[in-house]
Length: 196
Picture (spheres, helix red, strand yellow):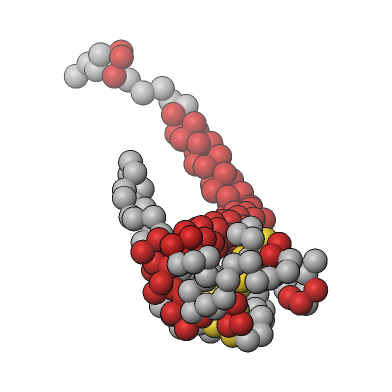
């Protein structure tokens, strides 16, 4: 039986297939050897990017809390809420959750929670001596800490002393909200009483 010429296989096809398998084996072997090295470089960079995003989100949360506390004070004779209920009192002044596009807005619980804190905790505390006082009380509001990150993860946490978590949650930095409404972060080695 005669086979049409277009169906005939060239006699060198076995040699070409073998060469193809050798090339594929070398490429696969190179990937197996190089991937761990690539991952060892890429994964720390990815981790740092996630930590930086959490620091930015924490800073944003404290800024929103600061705005809510300022609006609250405007409604209550320029006084901050009592330190034992500051989250409860500020919550109605936070933006209402509305979805925009494909991203849902943050809830009050999410805003009051440090993104790097444990899942069910809050992670922010108010300086007790400022609770219920006039917003004009601090002599230097830009240097007076109002809300700070804390290891106390309870709702409405407050403390007489500014005690940030050790170690810090954000790339060796802690975030603070000051009495004038601005936020800033400092190295976890910084003494909170001497930030400025």
